[in-house]
Length: 334
Length: 274
Image (cartoon, rainbow over all chains, first blue to last red):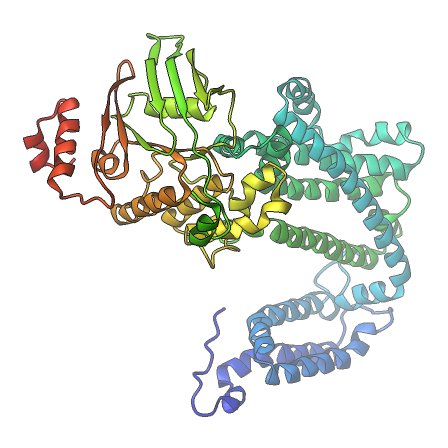
């Protein structure tokens, strides 16, 4: 959303005090919704029984306080205010969604229990099981990074070798075409038997899941490098090493990153399935375990943590991409 | 030329030794599975004198680009030999620098890094890094060192590509229609730039073009090539001083002579500007 900034008139120092009413209203919207949520939660009668600890109710004053601090900072820092004004409708929307969720569960009982707990119950699960969730997150991250890193470690060289040497391509591409499309999760029964521990088996599965798209996109990137780059480099005195490391690889990086993102996606999927089925730790295991006890508030809590973990990892990769492919700035649109 | 004077006029980069290219009985056939084989070059002989500006002039299909690619070492002659200073040519070499019609800058490198590519490829970037800035100055790209290729215009990109070839001190600079993709104004500006750089660097230049005016304006010698099969029809001298005027009667005389060689009547050429 575009926010019109006040046209500065008079002394520059006065500029920050002239905030248009509309901007101020948008800026205050989250606070207003937070108040409505608090009131709705406190004063409406419950349709469901709520036996958990009331962490959410206790948290309201902190949320309001936090927003007031943010609001205060925004009054004095123009850049911060602009960012916040831009995000404000979105934050308000999120709070609105929580109000609606609370209404249809706790307050009106429209959704069945135990599958659809109220926001307060999920918050209670997040807080009371924080330690287990944290350990599970730690294990999942360990599995994700080990597996993904191994997939990368094997995927990049395989792709580069296939793109550069036709003999290697001759032997590897049929294998890749035949085995690659098989989802890594299909290997679970075999992997669990072959490898000594379920963790090693899962690392293998995640690595395999990441390896395939990374290899394919690296290979495709290397083989699609504009041939005139090689010609130019050769007239400049380049040897084969230079052609591979200083021309082919940098030129194929945009394609490699597509593979890295695809690989990360399959790594997530494989990780969760592996943990649901075999591994005795991690968020996937936690979800399966909580479901076994019909503790759906915990299931939802784990899903929230998973979403944070996966989107965080993805944005981390985006950051790396933006740094490495800085030369594409203004060309790429994703 | 005295080294000290050279440093005074062109910074710290000394004037380079120019090379002589000899093309002897060179033919290039392209064998086709269907249809007749193509004779891209038919028994071409050419002696390119050191330090001179040569143009290869002809319509498309006359083999001028093929000949240039063979001299660059990017293509091989089916028959015949080509030597640089009596050394037979085998594959590309940095002493035969090349500028392509498309600037083909490496998009992942800044302008400065692009120009430094030749030194980097030869593993001497550390010792010669100071020269990169000289060449950036020579082609007038100061201030654009840290910029990426997609951020600059076609003319500037072609300047960068010229500097990238020159940084290796080539004995011969091969230019394959380097101004073909530029607009008329940028083109004339770049012609001046190329002449200025050539006069200060003293390297041999082989310049492919299909523009008669351009070849007369730039060259010492014009190699006129005709297609089907591609061959050299005539090599003509351009005994004009520099700077040249495109309106001088002598300029027009040479122009008319070239038109006659290609079978156009000069009167026709006067009324239609080819």
